[in-house]
Amino acid sequence: MTKQPLSILIIEDNAGLAANIYDYLEACGHHPDAAPDGESGLGLLAINRYDAVVLDWMMPRMDGMTMLERLRQERKSRIPVIVLTAKDQLEHKLHGFLTGADDYVVKPVALAELEMRLRVLVQRTRGDVAASQVLEVADLRFDLGTLEVSRAGKPLPMTPVRRQLLELLMRRSPGLVRREELETLIWKDDVPDNDVLRSHMHMLRKAVDGDAPRKLLKTIAGSGYRLGLPDE
Image 1: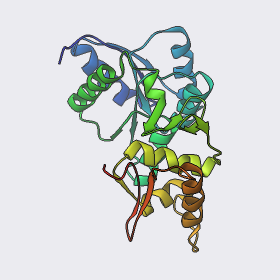
Image 2: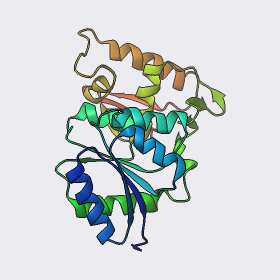
Image 3: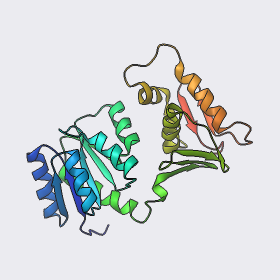
């Protein structure tokens, strides 16, 4: 892999950790910059060009997820973002990815691994920014920028909850997504006693498959759901 220098913005309120990451990246030949919170980070992103962002989750003034949501939804930016956090539970990782994170590194940080992840991430996303905003499975299309879902060119109605479920299923297609992951995604630690997920999945299947000759959404008995063509 070619080691081209990268311009990287580190948004981290822990001055010691920020300095360690900064010094390491600089020693690797990169051009780091730093901000102590999300609000300052957004300011720097508005006036400077960066190849990637290392973003802490918990910060004063503006936390990482709020900043990331504004970056993706308001500014429509697709700059690669690695979330850096001590939160290692599944629900936090799902929340981070669905908010717009491209990668997720749990503290304590291995600096060599972080630098490698940054290089791989930038290399993977360069020249393919527009495509990264669209998920496609067979003739099912989900534009993450506009939140429009269509199948064979026909718009599909989606509620916010079903849109979240569909996004995770499409990202993992054709793999299995366990029902526990889907429940955690929507309800965090407060999963309803009754099987509300089944109702949402029934309506999602009705929207996605309808009268289509090829059914994409499948229930895997006792496990979860998968989205994909029968032969995948």
